[in-house]
Structures are given as C-alpha cells and as structure tokens.
Length: 116
Length: 116
Image 1 (spheres, chains in turn blue, yellow):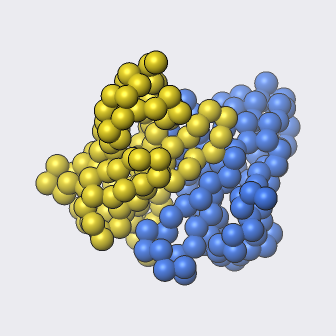
Image 2 (cartoon, rainbow over the protein chains, first blue to last red; image 1 turned 90 degrees about the vertical axis):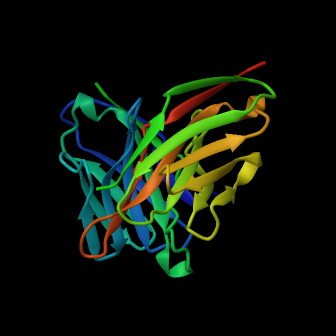
C-alpha cells in the first residue's frame, strides 16, 4: 500500500461547486502539505500543517481552505471552484522528529482537478 | 526569501549521452537542496538531497549532484542516459522564514527527453 494516498485521483467539476480533496498517510509523519502544480510553474505551496492544531498559509492560499482532521489526514477544500483552479494537486508529508535535518518531503500520487 | 532557478525548461539528450540538468539557488544561509523526479502521471519521487554532509551527493538510478557554494549551484548529472530517464526533474531548496517555520521552494522544472 502507498504511504501517501490522495482521493479522488481525477475530478471534473463546474464553476461554483464546492470540492474537497483528501490526503491520508500511513508514514506516521507529523507534517503535511498541499501543493498545486501548473505547467511551467513548478509546484507552489497552498497550505501546510506541522501538527493537528497547526495550520499555516502558503504562497497561494486564496480560494482554498484546509482541515487537519487527524495526524494522518489533511483535506483541501475549494469553497467555490473557478476555472483557474484547474491544476494537479499534490499532498506531501515530512517528519523532522525522525532526525532528518532536511525535513524531506514525500509526495502522494496527485489529484488532477478540472473546473469547467 | 530564497529561490531556485532551473536553466532550460526542456533538455534533450541521446541515449547513452551525459545528462546535465542545471539548478542555481539564492540563499544567504547554507541551504538544504533536493532533486525530485516526476514520471508521467505520477507524483514526485526524491532522487537525492544535500544536507551539508558531503558536497557530492549520490542518488537513485545513477544520478548524482554536486553542491558548489561558490557558484550557488546544485547541478544534476548522470553519465549515460537511459530511455527510462525521460521525465520532469525539479530542483528545490528549503526556505527559512521567521519564527522557525520554513517551506520547500521548487524550481519550475526541466523536462528531459531521451532520443534513441
């Protein structure tokens, strides 16, 4: 089984709809992240969470919200989807307490979201 | 803020030829640096990382990268390209912001094509 899973893997929706993307991990990591990837722009950080009670905005948080339901679960919501939110979304995890000074991030397989 | 620049959005090499993917970073403090690879329709996979232990870092699949402080570079190389190396490669750097928090900043990616 994959360590970091994302559901759904693909989603097509319409402008104005509320969408939730879910991320679960079995790595036991305390830190979780949401990124979006757009062609030619690399990955940009939307939100991150260093533990269950900690939520932080990233570079491009406008139009998004998150919920950290448990150490293993981190959900991303688009309250009212718009076409320029069409992108590939990645969840990632890391664990500074493991002794990894670089706090290496491990990525899920991604969710391809299309907003019509 | 720190940043990452990947020179060349597309690189083509012949099978068996040297692979060189360029990455330069800006940083006022010693950074942690990463190379990730993304195969078509997959998530990001860690290739290698620099954590100041050694300037020449060996990764998976025969890749390596050398940290050169004087040139602020962390170029990725592989002596002999294989068809399976065709993918998109991302350089990334840990960016430190106030209050002990930080995030991973990605370059825009370099798509590697391998010609038979």
